[in-house]
Image (cartoon, rainbow over all chains, first blue to last red; front, side, top):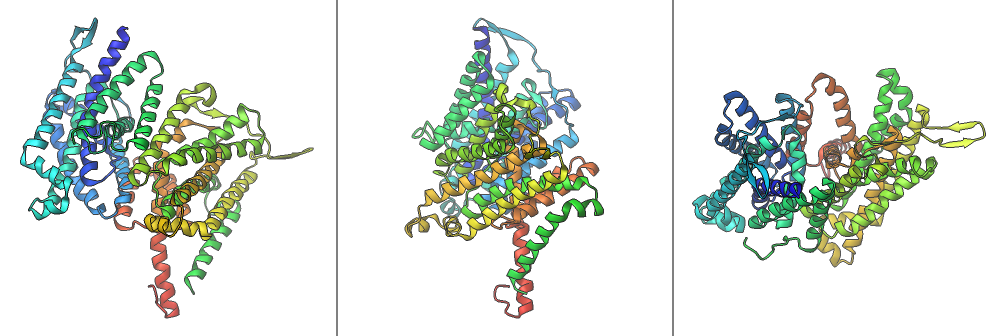
Length: 285
Length: 330
């Protein structure tokens, strides 16, 4: 029972982190119509940058400030050099982002090395919860993810830029005619997607391994959250990520974790075939 | 010279080179390039299966590794666990892959565009995880090795793939047969229907083509081709492993097909050769050469989305046009 509780809690924490990453994937797909195979690697770059910041400055908390900014800049650069020129070859965008994934992974392997590193959580304490001792850092990670997701939704619905983003997604031509700089909105969206994935990387760095292939493992999960939640349905993405991770956590406590993964993938195929707009279709968009 | 003559000449050069490679390659370079060329031929089939779907029917599959893996496991399980002979194992692998493609295709070709790409990856991931966890049957991470049964055994006379020449020409024969099948299909009415669906599926359905069945048949043929590639690779490496079912293998096949040029019969061979030769030559010099591959992929998508095949076609047309003075499509 203790194991089940611990794994279920871990599942919720991971689900929130995944939700943060998958939101970036979802806005990139929704606005730019691009399937971003490199998105997992944006997360991986986040974990590696967090590791570098912690190693060089000795202060892990700085990473929360620095890494999303670097992520934003990198995202803007990639949008300008790679994504903008392939706008006319939409079918091949998957291939281009696959190339991008190779470049990111190999660059990290060249600089950071191929050996996985573990980071110690900046908070070591545990507190009793539901009859088990639970790591405080994981609770902090969940809180940080919720805060970031909340901030993103506030930004999307309350700020001018966020309104512009929704307008461009709704109807790019009319939005441009109304004077919204659609070109710049695309760039900001992509950069924001990278930034959120890298922030997810910072949050997750102490509870996962930091290595150049980490993105490959996490990418299918992000896609599951986005598809099951409904492509473009941002609230659905968050809900799906948390629910999926929670159930995978519970199933894992009884059986082989890969069976949990296979179950989620089958659910995802079903959703794609039967309800391509996600299981929460009709909910908030 | 017309375009056709030049292309025929190019095909002839490729065929002559392939048939003489075991003697020519050791003279000019090293004998191990014969093995690498066999590997190129096998992998080019996987790229060709991507090309058949994307280049001719317009469906980008990111899950061809599944049928490749089915071909591999069919051979390995058939020989190591079920006690099949050489041809039994080979046939089992190909049939398994084709059957898998038929089942997956019935579901997958209902979707198009991004959704099709995603569902093909999802299917391949499901079976990748299954293969990883079902250790008694598949060997999981370690893979499933098997010992090579003889190809033909009559009395004292025995032909096995342990003889490098036999292995090479067996691979050439099988790969050649696959390209012949693909070439035949592409020039048949079914091939024309493929292109019609790619260009405009609505019009295709309005002139009475059954778009669903056409996509499904392309999917099954492409699964068959990938299955042959996987079965050959299992025989070539004498083992099967789940690692070859991961989506990175599918992605690599897509990259080879795109760089070689989609929508041309031999584009996949060109793309696969270029990238595998690059890998063999560069990996000693610069361990991080994949960065270069990634850059080439992105540049190809931006500047030459038709790949090397497209560049070649443009050059040939210009050359032929200038020579005959017609210059029709130069």
